[in-house]
Amino acid sequence: MRKPVMAGNWKMNKTVAESVDLVKKLSASLAGVSDRDIVVCPPFTSLAIVSEVLKGTSISLGAQNMNDHTDGAYTGEVAPGMLTDVGCQYVILGHSERRQYYGETDELVHKKLQLALDKKLIPIVCVGELLKEREEGRTFQVIEKQIKGGVSGLSPAQATGVIIAYEPVWAIGTGKTATPAQAQEVHFFIRGLMARIYGDAIANSVRILYGGSVKADNIDTLMAQPDIDGGLVGGASLDVNSFTRIVKFVKA
Ligand code: PGA
Image (tube, rainbow, N blue to C red):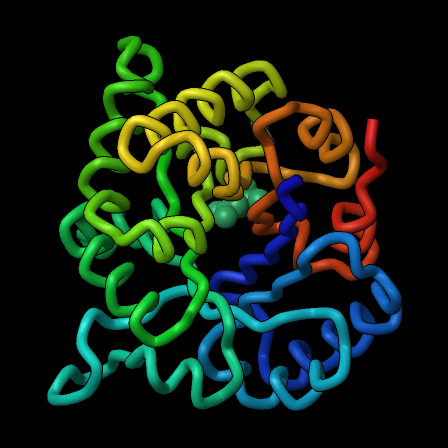
């Protein structure tokens, strides 16, 4: 049985005061939820304070990105050890916005992934096709390249701990969710790929999240799909009521 994970990606939103307000409300509304993993990923500036607020709650802390070096002269960057230092347990890697606006490649994602695992951070590695790629019938090809380039070459123990997020780029922030069937088709494909690379046991234990316009009103049907193990939620994670409802999705 794979434990569901719901992760909120706040992106470049929320001041320190707003972050504290949101997590205080979320810790109250989600108190006692233990049959699913809950993660919030605030901006770097809010991590330390949010970490304090979350102590003793069932919500874990994640970062949205990290550098691929442990320390040194990398102006403006944040090292993985700095994330664990402030209490992060998770880190999002290779989000499509990082790939699109900051030129992140599969090779870089792989480097970050190795380092995150070395630092005992749980990585959430994002993959997903552009609209054009889907329209040209290249979705599986694109995903295969991203998974092979980003997520292969790990030890079995490391591979088991990786979380993959399938986020079709055309569905992110657009209100256009993939249908549950479209998402399931790709999740099944990703699990099959992981089986080819790491074997069935690991593939069956790896959690694969769906992301892209996940909302309170579509989460139940998405979670009813056999290979969807949770959500990476952007816009809807900024609001206490909608993220609470998403975390408390109703099992079909
Ligand atoms: P969205 O973003 O839920 O706002 O579409 C998801 C994501 O980018 O992780």
